[in-house]
Image: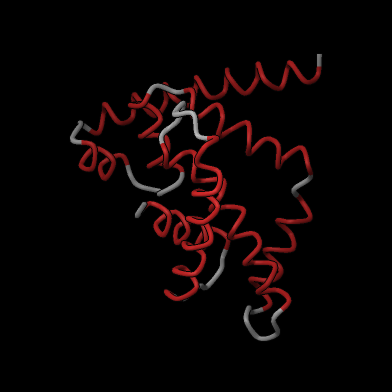
Amino acid sequence: MNCIPRILQSRSQRFGLRLGADEIDDASQQVFALVWQKLPEYRGEASLETWVFPFCSLTLMGLAKRHRRSPGQMDEAQESLLEERDNSRGVGEQLDDVHLHAALARLPAEERAVVQLKQFDELTFEEIAARLSISANTAKSRYYRGLVALRESLSRLKGGFEG
């Protein structure tokens, strides 16, 4: 499962965490242990990478909290960003993350792959095209078609909670 360190590295950079290779390795082992423990719950409705993503995010949130409690581990700017993110995310937004990953899992594999590479790995359409052996225009079409489907799926889901 070499996707775990890659997801952790990408997400830690997005969170503004400065993690060393040892910390990424430790976090990868934690995620792998969680995934192994929860593997009987995996139903194959999503790619394994999509299913693993929330485990990576949760592990990084715990790591960020530990960093905040350890003096000198983070500079003030990083600490401020993490506090702002935590304070702005209520339970509803955390549920939105779960629903987003569920909606993402329902996308056709071709669209899901492009959306994941664009959003999670922050690749350009040209990089996605090269990785998937498709044209950049095909990557764009799949990406925007996937976004429309995600939007529709999430609005139906949200409508079900409000109604």
